[in-house]
Length: 378
Image 1 (cartoon, rainbow, N blue to C red):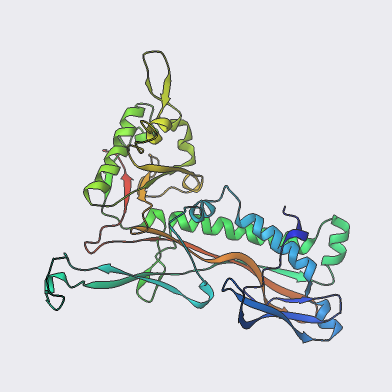
Image 2 (image 1 turned 45 degrees about the horizontal axis):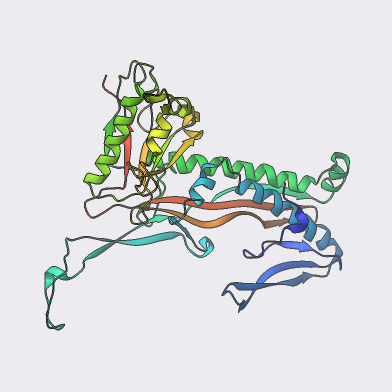
């Protein structure tokens, strides 16, 4: 766990009630001013001078402990969502408390430029035509209660802060739920006419049928060689190229596929072995880029927990563009805990929430920048 003394209370959200050593109850509110970096500033405002009110709230130090454990779970390197947030060049961060949808524009007609000697010249063929598309911004949350009668004595008996431990469990639930949604989707959640998608439910028309048969398990069968798997992945990248979907690309696979990637792809004359993993990411030399333009291979445990992607009991894989023209990661609410209800003088209700989702863009022809591996022949 992070050292709570080195954690600065996250005040950006506000509306978090806490007590200080002076015995007063405070809430964080925006000042309306900005610091030298252009970020809004906040202040702690007294909302009650009642000792009873102050006793029902967490202390400033307790909130630092809560923020510490929540932040640890948010940045857990094993999380699929943490991997998404780490895709540099694809991530767009903004304030999701002020927005429920994210909109972007796409070209709706074929346009081309032309040369002219007169800037007053006009040509309909060079006028850009656009349409609007977007995605809703759902929040994943879990609640927990702090209790001024039970928590202090329980903390003393246990030797750790019970409130922070409750927040940890809520954060773990949010992390697990959001990771699964980013993989499986939000069950077709639609708002303002647009739908949020996970990797498994993107309605892409770009598909490649995997080697092998359904009966033997497709890619999961020992009858399918590393060379056949590589050929399928090459076909997936080729299909993206044919549809003018630019790279770089990421290959996304179930965690259980790790051992297939480790299998030998080829052996040189001097006996050196090259694994399938090495073949996928190889560069002929420092001046020549990766042949497939695959820069990320991500193994996802959640794809083993639930069957999906239209390929149950057989291999599953996705190749997606990491070009911002085709794919973005919307990071609109960092995981954090805040107060949502003061339940009398004894118990306070808190909520851990996080907002991150992928945005799969499509062009005017309805083509998405992702290829799905489908079930093999019967």
